[in-house]
Length: 521
Image 1 (cartoon, helix red, strand yellow):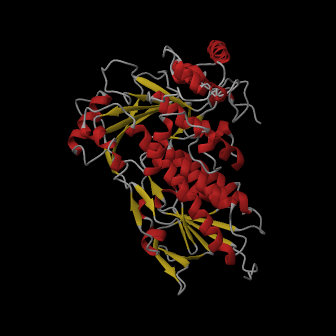
Image 2 (cartoon, one colour):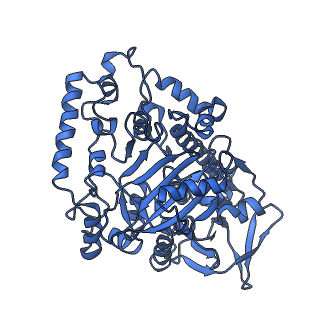
Image 3 (cartoon, rainbow, N blue to C red):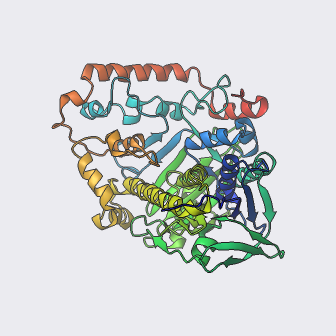
């Protein structure tokens, strides 16, 4: 087979803005040298008439590497995007209903479990249960419980004493990415409503037309138009694959709350609280809390959902403005067709339980930039590879989110009962759970570099949720000796005590960064 590599791709058009659009544009422009006349021209066209939801967003640690790579100052990011630090997620009442005997919460933190003497999981499973899994293998749960930040002012930008991500205002983040993309990376920005998508006889998109009368041509089109999926879905006709038979939550209610006091403590983690038909999120930004209730409309009425949400907020009088947001749960059948690739909600969406939104947008946008076809002739090959990788990622994301529900001990509402039905659990997850009943998960079960969630993520959730693994049949040589494990767990506890005396309060850290700035790398 002969490939003609003379047909270079010189123009990329990103249709749609927001976080997904601007992350895509920035990754492409950075990688493809758009600020140079010899580079690939990246244009982003977006409407001025699409409102942002603005509920407060969570991220995962991978976003730090992207921001560093794109050349965005962490200090500038904190100052301009109402940013706070996120060290994980606190899951309240997920294991059992409120008021039941046993721990009321567990932490899924971002630091990897300590493995200085080997994986401590098997030995922890043999212990008497006086220490939670996260506290046995990591210092970060204690740091979260004490309301401390992940670093102090001596630590440079994007580095931490423990791992971290961010909570942020998505609208402000998009504005920061817009300015950085245009001023530093060479993105051309067009504000206009796209009214028509034109395709040629081969099915390729050749141009879009705007309400202002402009026709914008390109060689590759990136669809970031949200649930509407104007390019890949509407114009290219790629089918949406509904996943509500696995992940039931299909609506959200959202509200913003000011702090009762200006200097109120800010949790350095997302708080996820299980409710009768879903869960609430609670994200502390520097000036306000972003909250919401994700629920299944098949298991509760919208009025009942709002009642539950307002009870959580302490708003029985109904004074707060609450917005209802329908969610389309699933993904496209394919993600790159002809010369059109989807990033963001136009590609897929599942509930934001583990901050999957920005995580998948960022990961797939960077993948697109890093694997960008050298010429039009090889685009079908790159597209097939991209589709395989993105499909793998979505399958793993769905498995991980479903894990939280199907191993819960809650049986107090049909929502929780139905989540444990085998018919709602993917075969791939059922197989893993069967294996993990006899042995803890291992790194060999997460072999791909494209794992969105890896071994540590599964360990924290499995054993935070009190999943039972019978390790009696395990070969003793596969695990550290009990004295070594106990000694290491004691060392972790001692290090926790040291950090409690060193790390600043979370709000105090944010205030100092805004005032003085962090050290440049």
